[in-house]
Image 1 (tube, rainbow, N blue to C red):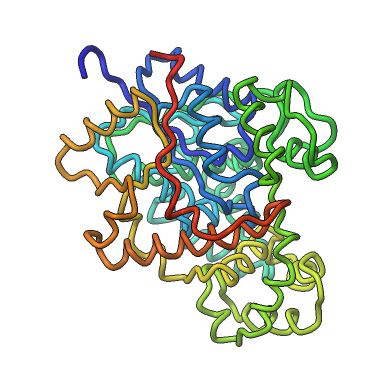
Image 2: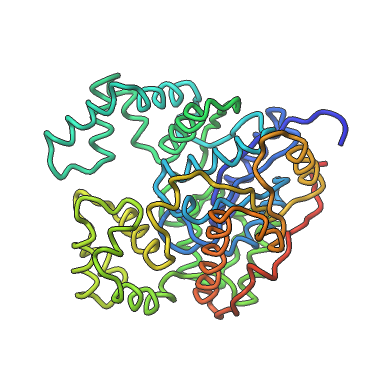
Length: 410
């Protein structure tokens, strides 16, 4: 490799990849990034459900639209709350040892306020103020208690940042960078187009939820003009082959059957299962015959729908609370282009970088914790294969090689 090397990282789901994502990658290029590495969720995502397209299709779309290297965010972090999700992605970028900046979209579009709020949340005084809010309002949702604690410490304007989901993720990215004392610089980009949770007819800069709703209503729908043409072609090919869109509903009988075999102690071992929630889940599981009804029975003012979906998904996939005590132990490569090879060479030459996994033959040389995570990932992918419109055979995780695409950004 020769010439200038300025590597930026992006943490993403690309579920599915759309024009707004392409704009973020383009703005990262315009700010001087010569190389772009993305850390992307695998086949199950933070909403507590299956990704609408598998990780291999989303990798091809990302590479065709501006990414140079795609690294998988391991399952226990990909299907976790915002703080855990963000830390996992940031840690992988940090341990690459050569990432200069972390680029992310946010509703405020300003890095400084997000960094300041992150410092407040990490301060010694914040936990006591938060506990006081929770004590004074029993049953209050945690996000609201946190916002009220921030307002008490630094005012309503700062607290209002926590009303927007991309701002929240941006704050969590900044928290993770600060806790790791990472040299990576956060760089917020103003999010344009439809809001994160927008529904209805997609715009030319849609939200991912709008496109997922479109595919739910019309599974054979083309995603043009909402996606770059290269991504839309990838997605159309997946749809024609019966691999997309995947639906958690297709796994409903298997999930419910698995849950009925679990006891309160097993539910208590799940991530974020606290305050006796395992008993509420156990009771609900024995009274329901559908996932939507199950979520509704467990949900309360205290526990959000997203948290409940993640708990149920964790139970089904075998994710345990202890899986994220230690940070991600490897860099699992899903795809790359020529510049991605440059990035891998730089990682290999960087002291202290994480092991790079490019093929499953490397597994025996990894730590027991890494081997367990990769086995968990492969098992989850076998289950995901049954969520496709045409159920797929097991074992793709072991057969699929790294996706390699030529780059239009050389």
